[in-house]
Image (cartoon, rainbow, N blue to C red):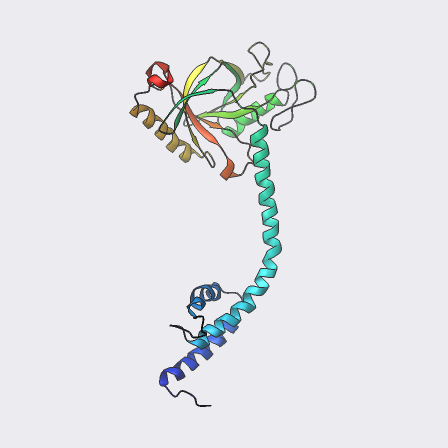
Length: 283
């Protein structure tokens, strides 16, 4: 056998040997995977190697197979468990979305991504507290029986008990200023101002809202203050560009329970508008 005596070949023999020693002492390095994916495709179908010396590429291939094979066998159960949890999480989100009763409305128009809705008279419970957690706790207490009917309920979607029921209808409405949060739970349409049980907690009010026209902009993911603030600005800018007058400040509407996946969540910013300033098509 005749060896090529080119000095370049001898250099690559040395470099290839050093590469073998180096990668033999790396247990599981991203470098191996990068080289395996990026460098090895440079081999041609006829067995020759372009740009990359054979000894380096061959050493990388052998080491990558030794590393990636055990990695795949170890990570397969983890990926299967992750997929199962994700599927159950998504299934829960679908279940909640399909079973939660929502406030009825009629869509009368849409302008640049903003929905114009007509709402009937609605009944809700409302409270103002220093934090959203405290406000939610008070309203949750109403659902658990802090009302004149002593109607204890379970926190499901919808909320039900044997006999009398007090369902929590989506969405949950939230308003906030610098140091106070006002939160409200709508009651189902079956409740009227006369049939809804009165709260026993004086900090919780039973509110009757007359029929109204509102402009709504939808958004997903978590309704963080920053994200909700941006959506409020976009909503008001759209209304202003179309000459639609808004009453008060927009409020945040959240339709999902805390366990719904973020990529399945539905939120809205809503503001009451003057129906006489709407385009002709929505009057």
